[in-house]
Amino acid sequence: MVTFVEEDPLPLWIKTAHSQVMIFIGFGCLLAFFRFYGFSGMVFNFLTATFAIQWAILIQGFFQFYYDGKIHLGVINLLNAEFACAVVLISFGAVLGKTSPVQLLVMALLEIPVFSVTEWAVLKYIRINDAGGTILIHLFACYFGLGVTFMLYRPSLNNGHAKEITSYPSDILSVMGTLFLWVFWPSFNSALTFKGDDQHRAILHTFIGLSSSTITAFALSALFNKRGKLTMADIQNVTLAGGVTVGASVDMMISPVAAYALGVMGCTACFFGYRYLTPFMAQHMRIQDQCGIHNLHGLTGLISSTAGICAILLATEETYGPSMYQIFSHRAPPVGDPKLLELQKLIPGLKPGLGRTAQEQALYQVAAVFTTIAASAVGGLLTGMVMKLSFMASPSDKDCFDDELFFDMPSDFNSIEELKTPMSNDEKGQLSSADTKV
Image (cartoon, rainbow, N blue to C red; front, side, top):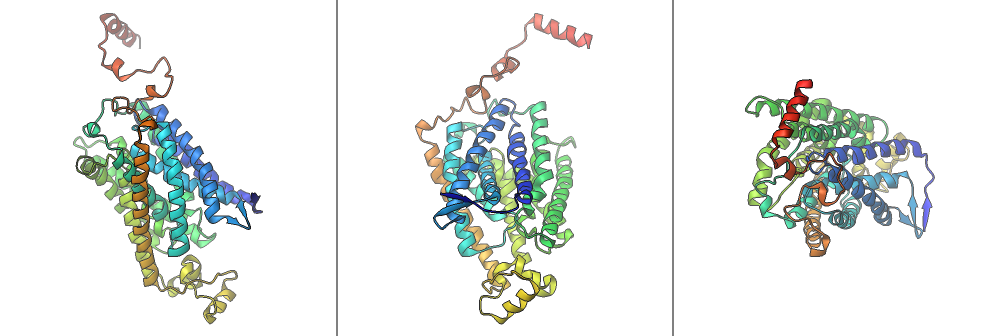
């Protein structure tokens, strides 16, 4: 049975709407960068996202919003479900072009419960600070996706595929997705922070981190190009690294300079990861990371987690004032501690904590990182085993990265075979005539 939570839905709905723009438009356009896989990239993202959100509302409802024999629903459920959906879509990037719609739905069907259990266990028993979802969203999604793609390894794709190419229109569409993600990322990172100073810091730190990673991405792209030109793949992906890198410490007092530095560090790691680590993993580790999620979400997530741990170790009551016990709620005094009553006079509604020290909380953050990576990797491997079963309608190696396998294509679509067919003399004459008229 379901009941509805009474709340003012508008503020939460605004955050939810921003998340939906990122999920359906941002991810959708970003995944449409292959010339012959644009329909599939956008539409399978749409299909997987709608299913994942519905499934997550139910599964997360049992773990987080179930009491008195009912699942209590509110807009917050939808927002949490969209975060879970983002996890699935990030993992989807590792197997883009190599899976059928059936396989993607099965991946969402299995990943959501594994994620929900991991999230519930980490938040209930380990209890961490992760306002931007660095650990529970980015790291989980990354290593789950890598586990899946490890099981779906295709040796023949190591040296590339004839249809694994981009085009001028597809790259433009993909960078539009980047822009949507870039603009709305501050909303994503600040969605679950406390109103007031915490939320201000989260928004500003995210914007600063994204800005620094963007400038750095342009510089590195031109610097490491033999002709000094920009590479669209760098603009589409590396520019977003700063949003992930500031995530674990986004609501903490890390200073704008630190946020800028984190953006530069994340961008640099992501850039060189795309250039060197992704090919190495494909050739030597059986991990074909199609969209490079290990660079944009894994490497940056590890940097962000480390920065968050450092920020926790440096946090003192002298720096934060009494509000420290709101941000680091597990460091608040436990029930029965006289200091709790004093703090509750200054901060009405402050809940009892666990009385952890900064060092203890930092160790719990480390435990959460390893727990999340282990759970996601094992879950990804098991999910990949299921997706590999013969009745999952997996496309053949020849049919990978091809919309024609799943869609009725419009008449102006040119397949790879048509592009390879040489033009007749009449066609060349018509083309020359058209060029002359123009």
